[in-house]
Length: 212
Image 1 (cartoon, rainbow, N blue to C red):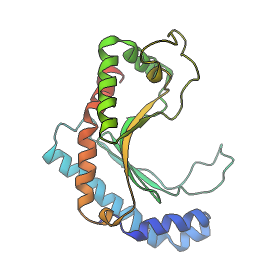
Image 2 (image 1 turned 120 degrees about the vertical axis):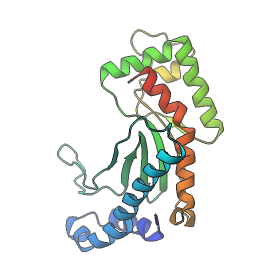
Image 3 (image 1 turned 90 degrees about the vertical axis):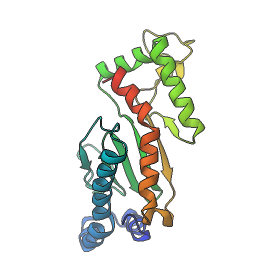
Image 4 (image 1 turned 180 degrees about the vertical axis):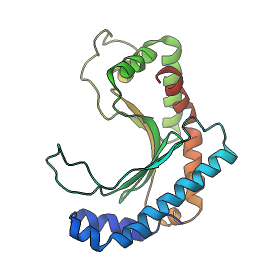
């Protein structure tokens, strides 16, 4: 059952030995301590959400991202990520030496999607709804932010707009990180993940309704 201390140890060691020969020597450890537990988590959470919280079904796809990095256009030629990630019903799960992160949102959208995002923020009804959702999440201890933002007001919007902080965002995400403690190796982690996904559903719904 995910995830034992050996998974976190594997990633710490990989960070110090990010080379193909080392990885191949430790591939069995990766498969048993990292990839297989993540696969089990994906399958179990998919079943749980379908049974306990059927409203969380906007995106029924499940996927695990490859550990191999795309180094074609990167100055960093390290071949492997020091983490593993998966998508479950429109949510994102990420395991790294820092712990387990569970979140949702949109990542660096195309210009047309970004335009819809900003228009929804600027609109009094939908914009205020997002503000209420984000405020509620932050009160519960969730991190809400963006991967990138513009320094000033985006074109077509006033710098004194009441939601200028949101308008400057180029994308948005929300989530919570759990420390790499013993709880992550028990079935309690599934309840933690389900709670996060349930709490994030209004946030996800807002994006689906007003942006996608």
